[in-house]
Length: 408
Image (tube, rainbow, N blue to C red; front, top):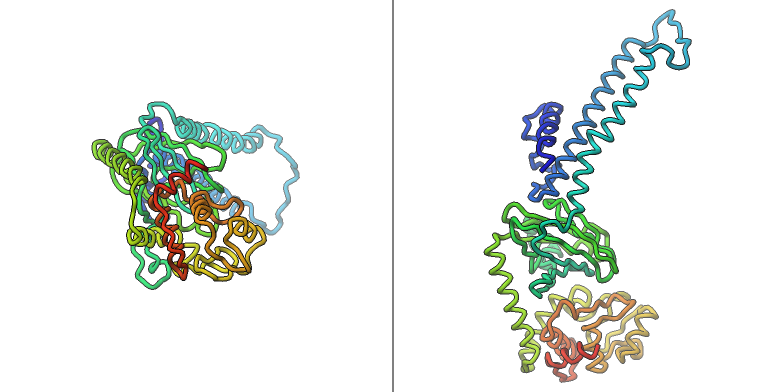
């Protein structure tokens, strides 16, 4: 790109200032940037190195002038104070204005032009874009969609609970691993559209040079063109609530042929999932599937015991008191037949489906309709109504959830 010559020139300057080899400016140390693998990341690192080089030289020259001034103009016996109050001679005017003009030139030309080129490159999301990916932030996971292929799925933290509790050794990618990464092709410019379903999140992958806010009600844009296959990790960069630290980003870059094969497999899998909405499952199948889906999706709030968190997340266990429940949550549950005498009870089956499917507005209960299949929601509701001391005997089939989606 246009920054290549500037990057090399200022890389040498930074190396000379630091007393290292020119390649050291791009070394990946503990205080360095992650290795850039996109044009935007390269631009970002080049501008960073340029600014740091200039700042280093300005600081060094300033310190030299300060030391020389202290040495030559220090107080001596019989000294006479200066009598002028401003520049008078041409030399004095030159010494006063030259630093100002030099800083203006440095700021608006040497630093400003490369920064402007970097900003223009970052903002150009459409030129030569080969595909579009939609990224939606949720509390607390990411949803990825490929509109042209009609494929979408969610990506959640997969770090085992034992590691988070400190009862098992932590692996090198602790809190930076997910069940389903975002998969992108190498060498293709991908236009990234970002939004949020609830609060402000921020999609941040350092190796891509991207940190773009996902704002509810708005569609933000960015782009990536990955140069090398591999796995790249990032995190939500905006404090978004209790589980903010538990919504990492993992991007898997593949060769275009591998990516096409993967995308075709996802299309087939989603078609199979849609077909499963018409299947009829036995009680044992629903309970087994529901236990797995509950522990993966619901246990973070309602706990594996079904007892919830007092005052925050209501218990699933039958007859357990939800105290202290906020008036808003108590009313929301009571309106659905799930709150009586200060205790959570098993309310109407259809409203139970609606709670899992659509959430409860104004409460921590999120909508899971966009991230769970009909079969998963049917299994979760069946499991909750027949576990933790609940013995309704109700079975919810995928078709029931599909009908509820249509009604909503």
